[in-house]
Amino acid sequence: MSIKTESASPGLPPTPPGDDKLDKSVLLVAGVVVLGAIMSILDITVVSVALETFQNEFEATSAEVAWTMTGYTLALASVIPLTGWAADRFGTKRLYLLAVGLFTLGSVLCALADSLQTLVIFRVLQGLGGGMLMPLGMTILTRAAGPHRIGRVMAVLGIPMLLGPIFGPIVGGYLIEAASWHWIFLINLPIGAIAFIYALVVLPKDNVEPSETFDWLGMLLLSPGLAAFLYGVSSIPEHGTFFAREVAIPTIVGILLVAAFVPWALNRRNAHPLVELRLFANRKMTVAVIAMALFAMAFFGASLLFPLYFQQVRGEDALHAGLLLAPQGIGAMITMPIAGLMADKRGPGKIVMVGITLITIGMAMFTQLEADTSYAFLLGSLFVMGLGMGATMMPIMSSALQTLSDHNIARGSTLMNITQQVAASMGTALFSVVLTNQIKSSDSAGAYLGLKGMLSQATGDKAAELKAQLDAIAPVALPDLADSFATVFVVGTILVGCVLIPAFFLPRKPPEEPVDPTAMMGH
Image (cartoon, rainbow, N blue to C red; front, top):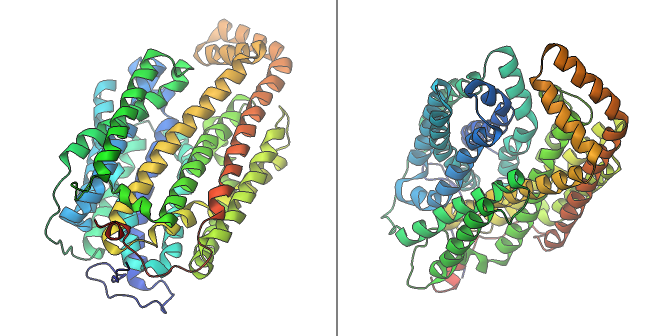
């Protein structure tokens, strides 16, 4: 069954399939969405470079300050499933304004926090707003542009999604060095105010239809289930194993809750589940979700390794480690608009295959890491990977959403964002554990990092003594440490290569008329 829909958002004139250009109204809407995405995504990586500062500021352990990241992630995971229903119930404009307002308020409160406990609480408030921004942004853009132009608008949205992990450490490092940690949060106040006013003026008025019933049981199963699962997974690097009680219990509880949600969501008596799993009846959507899961695991897992290598093996500080990642961002910016246009004209299948091949080649180059590998080789590898990333992530997203009817766009973008969040957390945990175990297998590498950590806290004669010990052990330890990173990149290369399998089945033709898989199943 095929359902015709207007491709424009309510309040915008529908765009005919023959009109391929991104007109002014769509570009204005895209600007709103990109501003929100920049705030949400940059914030995750900006805070990551401030963890050591938080330790010193609040006299806390690394495990305690990690909650500033974990609390944000758990809030994100809890609110994403609610976004599809809330967008249909209250309208995308109202919900987007609420999300921007919550995020901005949370940012200001974080900057005013006088203890680690209050900082974590305000980070949760930030996460509640930030978790809605990406799925809402994807929904707003998809409805505004229509299925035949979704590749190009997703390329616009992809800029902050790909560049956030690269430039976040640069921004965070600079603000902490030039001002104070408070400014990594205060920077969101002017951006948030501009985004709120911009959205208020530009986004079309909501035309909300009669509300669907809210899936209370689904919320009680899925939101806590995702939060518990991600908490367990994000605890793996700290404990080094899944079998630690602090890891296993929340992970298993989360899996059981999510598993219980699946039959409830597919039950015919549940007319409006919290997350529409019936969308998997759409084969193209299913293939895109699988491809996104594998890609997110590899991309976000590897994003952790690049700056760590530059800092731990090459001795760069956080700011310069971030700057050295710039070629990856430049490569992505070159290919992203081209890939978006090609995905609309010829379908995303071939584009993604080329992109994944480039990423695999670039990551395979990192399997040859040594302690003194030339920077030209490293930066060239990152550039090749960037070219591939620009042709991969957003075409996969667009291949899923361009096949959905207007009614299902909010639910589809929610499903894709849940997939990305879960896969990214799993990838980060996997790469962290493999790297930690590799380092532990080398006595010299482990001792070197231990001494380096002690040196960062030492002063005077003690610092000079530790520096002498570091210099003595470095000729043996650094090659072992580089080998540890090279081994983890072997895992990353294999994981990225696996994306070629679902990518082969992505559409290789321009998007057709959207379908409603839930209607096909008698929903």
